[in-house]
Image (cartoon, rainbow, N blue to C red):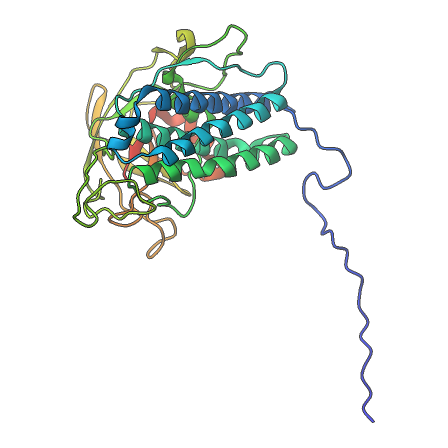
Length: 361
């Protein structure tokens, strides 16, 4: 006769120790600090800008102008849905901020045709996503961060959609990039003309503007039967001729500090950095530096780097493949300091100018 041993089991806790906000205290979905308020208010301003952008683009161009570049009724309806989504996101942020929440401003947008509208929209979507990723984990209000994360994951589809409309590879990265609030505000402020008197000032820094003179341009529309050469909207696409490549020269110009900018010209660009020496390429999990050369006044050159996130065989930081390059952010700095996504704000005191959006693809 075989005796089966008896197994004694220990009751499981089902709730591992640790974690934040896991006790019985009711969540408080509002700012708990000035950092929280300023960050959420910046996110709200970005959502309101996007809302106006999508409506403005749809209203500015005719049906024929959209259809000439293969953007048909169902595609335009998706843009309208994204605008409606912005209403929900702005409502959520306004409710969390309370009575001091910003209202919609008056904006100016730098595009003249449908393809430029689509490209600008994918860049603005990337700026918003990367800016929120840069601060969300630093919010004192974890409850507000929870709702903002649920907003961000919905918004993250926008850039992919607009890239598909441009016949760019839709998801060219393994990780989305994080930038600082000051970088985000520097990129958004030039498109805001004026705001209602009740809107509170945004307290983040505005860096001097940086311009990529020979920025790769994905807006050219090519309708051809040659495989991989056309730029019609597509679910996915590998271009036979990439927009950029490692080693190519990048020509830069930048402003001196002290320029009036933003709503009602009530902000002034500022930098605490020393002389310009490097170009920081902020992409995915990495910040990679190249030397700034041929510096004459506020002009200089550098080269597009060739590196990967984890080393050989992993995702490239600039060119995901020859045909699948991403969008990234570049700034001019006085030092090549080491930063990671969680402490990316440590680079702020070293920024001479920027960021600029570098459209590698």
